[in-house]
Image (tube, rainbow, N blue to C red; front, side, top):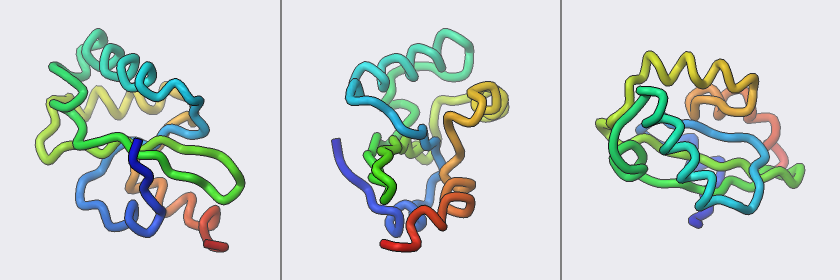
Length: 109
């Protein structure tokens, strides 16, 4: 998995999702997320049809967040995805919100 730093994340042109504090089963998580999106009518196709990539973001407090950056035109229903993300009860954020709301986590970097 490719690592991304916070400064690079702030400069990404496409939005995406950040999942907080994930485990080591990243390939399995990638598959689970893709299946969840497809099975709930949020998206279609493969992971690569939706996301340009998956990245690891190491937070200074030791947490590891996982970043999914959307493709330019992802095969995702963004309205339904917004509702799905809210139902995750704080386990994920939009990249655009994360870089604002979590900036203080990276101030020591």
